[in-house]
Image (tube, rainbow, N blue to C red; front, side, top):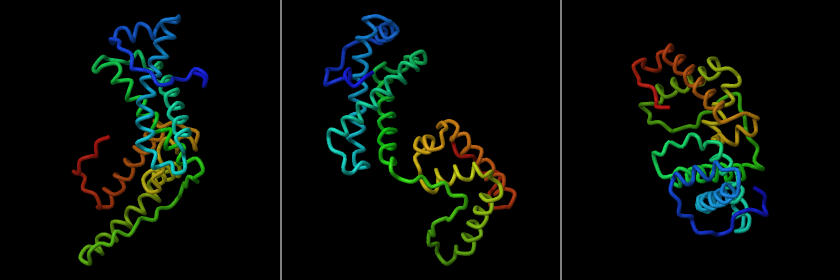
Length: 217
């Protein structure tokens, strides 16, 4: 969808779910009209989210925020059309669609916020001092050394850099995926594998109880 065709303020169209699916699958005039209306729905979602997160973008004015919302709506439209066969009718179609807009707006805001920021990919970990009580100093120090050792020895260099960037440096996963030329799913898989290796290493060293339940994924 080009800038010239972008949606201005429009009322949310009244359609039932079947009408949305049928018309969006149409390659003619009905399909074009449905996509314009779908973009209007998505734009409401992206505008809401961009303005909610505008504190992450100091210095951006209303026009820039609107451009960001429009860009997010464009990308979300592509995602909705790609995922259309996966709509299971467990909620209203517009409710399902709205989530795409919210998600994509968050991605665009984070990308913009990090656009000129360097993404650190450390190879070693420096854990923050949590100022434990005197009674816990020895135990805490031992655990920290065990964690640092496990990160250094149990993880591959790629797993280590990804885990530290996401968990310590708090780089947004979509930003890291862009910088590394990979996908969110690939990074989630790397992080999952890294956590598994750390769990094995800390269990073997006696710092983690084997019966401790895994965190939900």
